[in-house]
Length: 337
Length: 215
Image 1 (cartoon, rainbow over the protein chains, first blue to last red):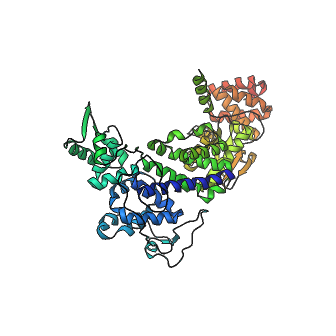
Image 2: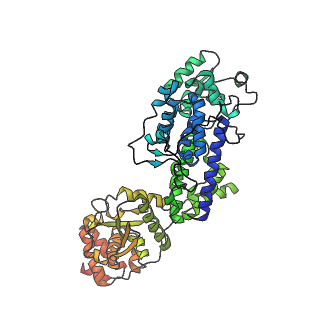
Image 3: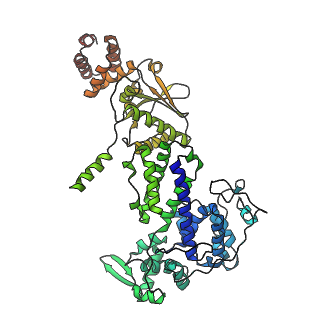
């Protein structure tokens, strides 16, 4: 791998893992300093990307599982499944392991639907990897739960350090609303309306990964309360909320967080991560490396567009051949920096 | 004003690149790399046209595409390039994006459809006159020889009345015998009197009056 790509890979890994730590810490995961982000956190999108990247950061992965024991009831399984169906994520088999761990107590039915091993079991593969991509050897007796899913790792110990999420933290609006009105489409609708001036049902359904019919019906019900407002222009119906009233109700004196459609962005960032961590990429000459990264970026660009982050990306057609490599590095640094 | 200048420059930067000798080598090298990455079966291309002229050093000019006249199978027999394998088209499409080439820079234009060169019959002994160049384990490119270029260029010059073919043909400095062989072959592809008339005109334009009289 050429030096700039090698250096960048380390930087990208670090920036992305720091970003995940920051998001999880804001939700109450122990062990990392909190940031001052101003966007809403998407717990399902975050969990899906962590299922892949967490394998390179054992402490984060185990802390997230720990956090789920405390807050897992607020995870929306329907939404999780729908995101997984609509976006490319590589961690479905790891999600099954997590769902298996969560399939106990009152949450058994909810998580069990995701707990089936994905695909035929191949020979056991190491669960965690070191920074250089080498498998981390299991220390102690292999964990039997992970072994059932074809993964080898040392025994998992839940430390119990994670806390209940902090409801009034700026970024935690999604969980706060779920705690208030339930883990259902109502919470997702309120979240979307509180982070937008007004919205059409199909827009909410698309951005929140819900079925349009379900959102439509719930909005009709909600508008009957006189709290969710409706304005019609022609045949289009737009729903809206009075943010000041909700700010008082939710004990949020400052403002509501910024909406980001995280799943396509996480999916794109995960695919870039996987490509950069593909040892085969390192063995290619710069022209072919550029070609591989260009091909990937053409594929993931629509995901960046849907998440509203495409402006950070250069037009690759302006940088032919190997000239694209430094441009790619610059774009990614801009995006994560 | 500045904005407009910048816009024009942006548009021109996105124009497909003409292929020089070096660009051609780069394109084949990259195509081979992409085939390796996709772990495809080996592919052997038989190339005619401007890119073959450039690659074999018969002409120093640029081109916009690479014309595949045939494929060679694993038993070293020439086979039809119509249709081209999907994996090859996918790899070529990525190379076009990487190097700013035309989308169909690698095409089977000369041998597509019933009236194609391969379908109507290639010049006798073409396979023995090929020059092979290997690009890794999955791509071998065979460039047609000078005599076959004369065959194809004469046919194209008469058929399409295109000055580029005539210029290429002149640069190849064909002899009377070569042109006579080429003209006879061309007439098997188009047996019409109209074509024969145009062919004779073309030969006269090239200064080969006697060949024009003999066919």
